[in-house]
Amino acid sequence: MYVMVQGALMHRSELLLSRIGVCLLAVSLAGCRLDLRESDASSESRSGSGSQVHGEARAMGNAASKGAAGSSVAAGAPRMTEDQFEGTDSGWTIVGDAEAISVKPELVGSCGHDGGCISAKDSVTGGTWFYQAPSSYLGDHSAAYGEVLEYDLMTTVSSSPFEEFDVVLSGNGQVVAYDAAPTPVANIWTTYRIRLTETSGWRLLDSENQAWSKDFANATRPTQAQFKAILGALTRLRIRGEFQNGADSGSLDNVKLGVPQ
Image 1 (cartoon, rainbow, N blue to C red):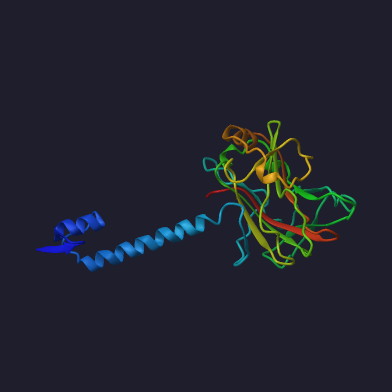
Image 2 (cartoon, rainbow, N blue to C red):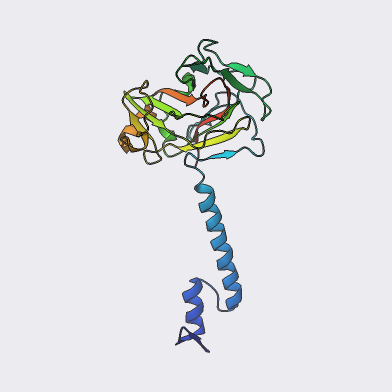
């Protein structure tokens, strides 16, 4: 049997093979088309979810299950370090414009989220304050290369936000920073997921104390070797805690370094 395809004669078996590659002749052409459409839809869904992992933030939906503070996965698997602040601040500290109150964050047992979190208040003395990770996040995290840094943030005020580095990583004498978007909405938990690769938007800084520049997007990108060297000997991980010009408070939860892609 022959059928007409775009003005040319083609044997039915050739048509089927050309459209689906591996389809038995006993299967109807309409059935094969349906399978192809379903396969395409699955591919689009995977592609869409993957596009969310690149510094994009999303409002929190269902609460994630809580685990042990500072825990890592079993030996032999990619190393992931995480803190969910259930009954402990896990050694996190505050650096910058909240130090006038305390270098230790406040441990909050119920954050209206999914359990505990840590929090700090802006001292309004100038500068920007950051959450600083404890020793469990330092050292060799080379296995996290290509994976994701994930964390949840909330701020009490965001009506007059300002620009600043959102995450700073230091290691092997080098420093990189990331400008995440968008600014968290006041009193709503927002999840940030940032790819740990040199092509994801990270930029080199001269030092940990370098001031924010409007030209940050055009700053020098780290090479793959530089980024891997930083992850291989991390000495600092800081996450921005304040976003408002003026007094505000911030909270942090569910920090995960090395989340599999």
